[in-house]
Image (cartoon, rainbow, N blue to C red; front, side, top):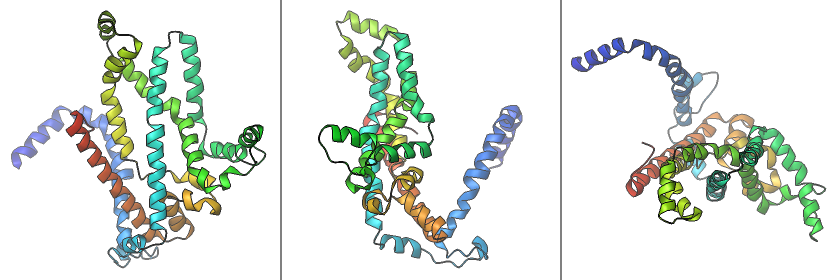
Length: 304
């Protein structure tokens, strides 16, 4: 033990300036990321603000049991998983496809124009995006103009429970498609041109080059980003949900984050909402660890 402490002290003394540079970042995570974890203990208490966290009575797993037995449990869990599943299945491959297509372009001006157009939606706030969607999906909106043009009936699309997930996921893909492709374009730029030259000599066309050179070259990047995305399966942002959903679409739109928002902030049931949020985080952690282990076993690469 003393030997370890002495080694640590020598290391700190030798690299003191490097640790000094890292100190602001360490303090940030300690103060804003780790210290607030203490507040998660209210999930096991009947939190009374006037008594504080330490003075509130301990109730154990009562809030978790109430949540699991709740009428809303299966509905919000199903909605959360389905929206995340659709986002991964349809949304995750799209930036990869866009990056591969852009990588094949030889006209740099056209390539730059496409990149700019696809990047722009990322910088539009969620409030504006939601406002545009409300206007476009209204009876007199753009989407209904197209539907009416082909002989369909006009109706408020955001009042249709069966269409909410499609609108939510589709708008998310549109907004983040270009921005998410940046990291894949960076990975593509790191592939050695000599590999493409060798493939051409072997008679490989562009399709074969993409299959046997390009995709293997960015495989590690794809795996890492997929693992990170799987670790966020239970995190469907409540901001866009609460801006778009309404009582008519609760059946398919209500997710865990929006449920926590209503219970915690609107109904001031802090302990119950903390229990739901903690359950959400634990499931995310389990999925992240499982996905990383599976990736290491199958492909030999992982996040950690």
